[in-house]
Amino acid sequence: MALNFVPKLLLVLAFAAFSTGARRSELELKETHMSLFFHDIAAGPNFTLIPVAGIAGKLWTFAQFGTAFVTDDPLTETPDRNAPIIGRGQGIYVTSGLDGRNTHVLISIVFTNKKYNGSTLEIQGTSKQFEKVREVSVVSGTGQFRFARGYATFETYLLDPATFYSVERCNVTVQHY
Image 1 (cartoon, rainbow, N blue to C red):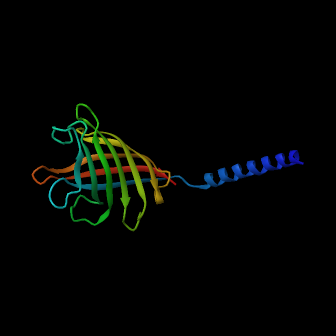
Image 2 (image 1 turned 135 degrees about the vertical axis):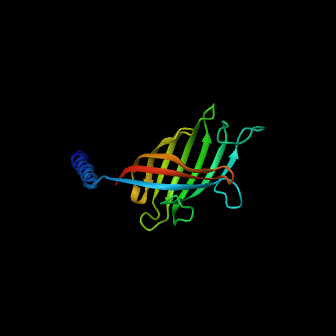
């Protein structure tokens, strides 16, 4: 009697695998392009970027190997500091190149605006921080960006060393379902 059960079980498993594949193929792959502006404030009472670890006895800077920064930057659709906030750029940067030229980036773009509220994009990779345009990978996402993959480029839009304020333009291209 047990031998009679095996072919039926195999048929049910094959049908389940086929129907799961059919549903997945019904999903439409979308491509989204967007520009966001990260507002970094590295000093003062409202800072959004801070060094949290580094080599003892060395100055903790972006160019010093081993320095780790935590960030929670407001994101806007324009470079205007007073533009409505559409999300947060939350994560860490670690200067990972011995020569201080590369930073490893782990950033979550957490959307709070109506269009993508609650969705995220996850960015990871090596940023060649002294190049004009830095490219990193978009490795995943949630909400409206499930199964996201793609890339993001960062460019310094504004740098004001006197106030420790900078604006980074982030252009994102992702494919998602």
